[in-house]
Amino acid sequence: MADNGNANYEIATLAGGCFWCVESDMEKLPGVIKVISGYAGGSEPNPTYEEVSSGSTGYRESVQVTFDPARISYAEVLDHYWRHFDPTDSGGSFGDRGFQYTSAIFYHNAQQREIAEASKKALDESGRFDNPVVTPLIEYTTFYPAEAYHQDYYKHNPVRYKTYRYFSGRDRFVEDHWGDQADDVIEAVRDNALVTGAGKAFVKPDDATLKKNLTPLQYKVTQEEGTEPPFDNTYWDNHAEGIYVDIVSGEPLFSSTDKYESGTGWPSFTKPLVPENIVEKEDRSLFSVRTEVRSKAGDNHLGHVFDDGPQPTGLRYCMNSAALRFVPKDKMQAEGYGEFLYLFD
Picture 1: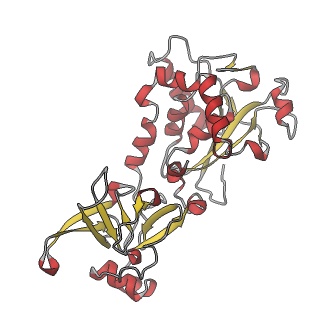
Picture 2: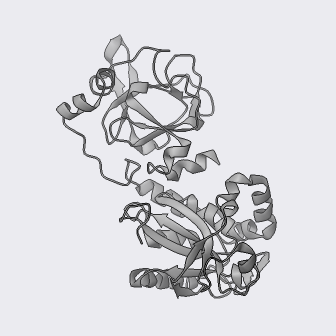
Picture 3: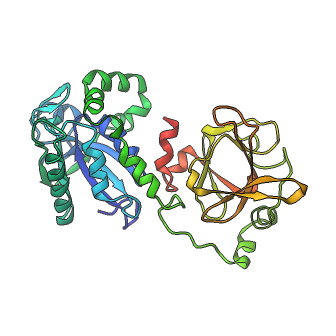
């Protein structure tokens, strides 16, 4: 069940109708490393989309979800999965009819089977649906990735995808049966996530190690509450898409989606990406009262926050580039920050 060379990752194989939609929904989960659309459960090797679409191969449109169990549990993955399709439909999925579109959980081991059984039973007994939950639990045997044009379809063909999803009836079903609770698992996992963004506890290095690993300016800013020159720093005019993390701890702090041109010469943001990773303290240096901003896990000085920013927050988080590291959008998944890719959909 290892993937991406990391033996700590696990895989969930799930079918819930159109794999474009299931892939999109599962990729939003914090702790999910990647999701692949494909075909599961059949016996013929290397099935094509046309063959599976005929309904005669024994394969279902499915996804394989690679996730980090240190950040999200298999039970939480299933909890989110249940909320985004109709598990009472034995004949297909919304507008897509036929065996190839029916739902299933393909368990990879006895522990997954036990968790899936308990999860299905809890949903069935919850009274959420008028009809019984019919999604079968099937021992995992085979999975083949779908053709390249099916992968991340919702990103590459957003108009067609959104039109299909809406008119299929999937969104209406989710809204009718789950409403505001549809994405509760995302919020719960994000609230409980470890602050590093990589799923691991952070222990701050000793002073000698910090001096060795940081440049003199980075050390002065983060450890001695220094300030770098305006208009002469790395990120003040960076317009690329991505997130900004603590230079020492790696905890996610700010997003390019909240960055704006403040005219000050320092990177400025209207709000933090993960408020729990920010600590604000009163700063009475320089003969004035300001609000210092520090990282929670790293306990590093980042900058200050002021109330002269744009709406809707009215705040200006004025940061030092030397305290930050920029992770571009195309590297976020590989570096363990894939949970924030939804910002750029």
